[in-house]
Amino acid sequence: IFNAWCAIREMAPYMWGYIFAAKVGCGLVAEIGSMRISDEIDAMEVMGVKSRSYLVGSRIVAAWIAMPFLYVVGLGIMYIGEFLTTVKMLGGVSPGGYNFIFWLYQNPQDLFFSLCKVMAMGTAIIFVGCYYGYNASGGSVGVGRSTAKSMMLNMVLIHIIGVLGTQLFWGLAPNAPIAN
Figure 1: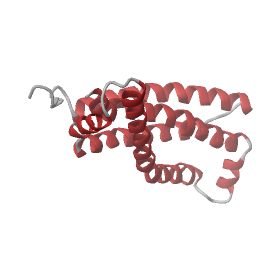
Figure 2: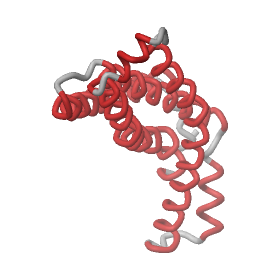
Figure 3: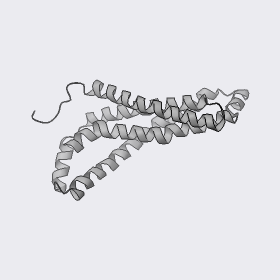
Figure 4: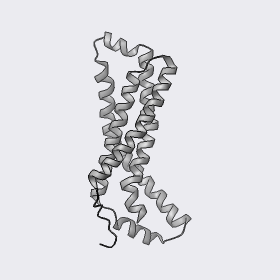
């Protein structure tokens, strides 16, 4: 039951948020920050391009397109990992029994709410990464500091969004399918 119920509601969004913050969020800070210190952003401004909307807007749209697909792939990999651990490594249940219980406790509403949490986390991560990258200064050391600051803020935001999302979607009535 834990694999089916808690993974999609809590474990997967948090793990996805950590990975997304480390890979994409820090990458954005490094990319945009290096553009800032090498005067590429200033060159965009001179050419008449609104650099903030160009750099941030395109990354937000790209993230919104990619995030649902990445998350569903992550859920599939998580299912495979849970199945192999529970059935093959621990041997606590048969494959048919595991699949029956797992799919008995899944519902589209939990998947949708989980995806909403992930989209909120991902959007916050992108905004934080773009902000710290756009405002980086002080050469490569400054970009490194901005990357570290963005990662710290992203970790806090992931947990705040996760807690608020859980309270908003499931609240104090999680509708646990146990003993109902």
